[in-house]
Image (cartoon, rainbow over all chains, first blue to last red; front, side, top):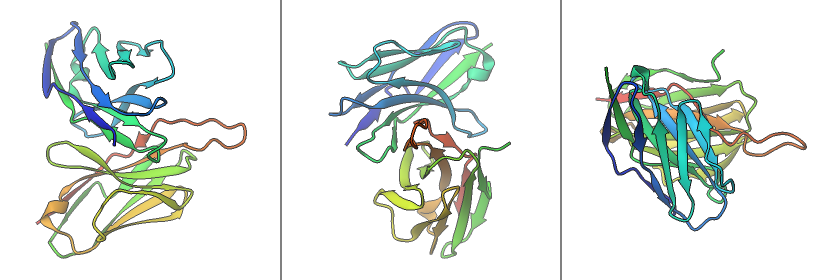
Length: 115
Length: 119
């Protein structure tokens, strides 16, 4: 079974600065998808970014980018130019076709943004 | 336009009662899911349905029964509610099987969640 680990329960960043959230996963599959979701206090789950395992190029979405290291099974999220609205819980998720396309989530990292 | 909607958003009930949570998606997706988020924010899959067929049943007590009347709806019925059932329940949908020439989206789109409190 796949497992996803987020080792940082909480991260704090100054507004306009950069913060990196770590995520590692365990799998024996070669083809899969990885996601980062944001959950603000409203509790809505918002997709931030996705990465296909077969792509070597790291995904980027505006101020959000990932560092995908397939051999190391690592998938970190970098938030650049942090804004107050970035404050939220961030969840790393692994999607397995072999397991019925379910998402396996990490435990989450709370991001605090200081003005 | 709400893509994935859930009703109710809040549900407070007593132990032993039976309750249902409804979910609807207007994205035309073929797969729907139920996830449970516990008090420590941990999210875990419960069920998934593809075109009304049960695909995933992740060791959930028999008191939980999903029902999919059509591919746009996936409801969750819970019998004999217990204190430990208190959590936020999320519905999600995705396009997991590409129709001929059609795209797969892979991303799962979540509803707003239903906070269930059992007293």
